[in-house]
Length: 186
Image 1 (spheres, rainbow, N blue to C red):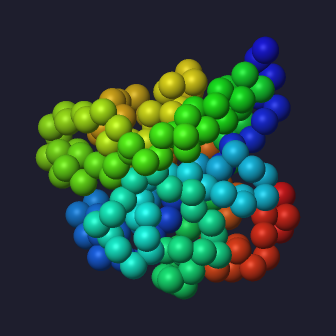
Image 2: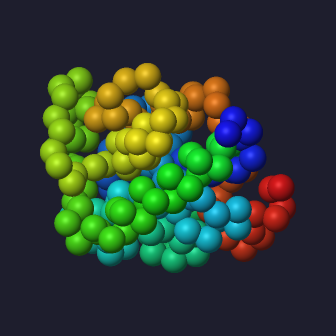
Image 3: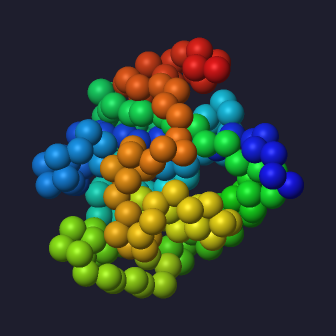
């Protein structure tokens, strides 16, 4: 099936946490985090980040909600929401892959070392360790969607910002989007 009749969403964000400020200062990019949603109402996004909003050290696979956790705590968080059209097979495979991550969430960790090695251009892969952009790119590649033409351990949020396959549908504060919802975007 070649029809691109499903939509997935990628959110690039900047919260203003210590780590996001450090990443933004180093990359000089507007966003420091990326997550993915398969739901048109943007109820849940999936990524690697803080498991507890006030504790940056304990990280791993997370389900993010626009009005909870880090996004509630950092009220002025900025974001860009992008859509990508995929076919049914890719959509349902993405859903399966995310469900596998959910089922194994207790074994998955945030790849802090990978952030550093990515920044200095050294390949460093560890089983069950991801940072946000590494995760989003890896799941796309796992279902045959090649957005960024480099290994996942070198992918940054900026790579998604520059990807021609995505269509920007929202830019602004996450709290405004959480209040008005996706229906204003579509």
